[in-house]
Length: 132
Image (cartoon, rainbow, N blue to C red; front, top):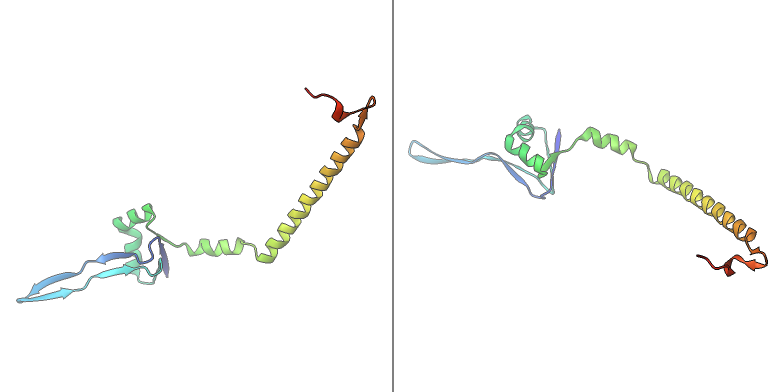
């Protein structure tokens, strides 16, 4: 089975045009075949349709312009396998938050030590010294 997606919700691609022919004095209508995307998706198992959508020059141009594209099922399955679950993500984010908090605490301790060391120099506070 092949899956395709489109930007348009109701994209229609004419695979075979409809025709009217005159046979023995009678006008006969021969319906064509259109590929219709529903809600931006189209699925088919028909080899002719798959071949048409993948190899027709008009369809290739539309794919290059981003009008529609073939969905790579294997890539989707691999991406789903690689994605982390909500629980895994929550644990990872909590660990990152703890690292950030530990870093901030260490930074705050260094700042406090620096302030305590440089409180006074020759009877004056560092804040009283003019800064240039």
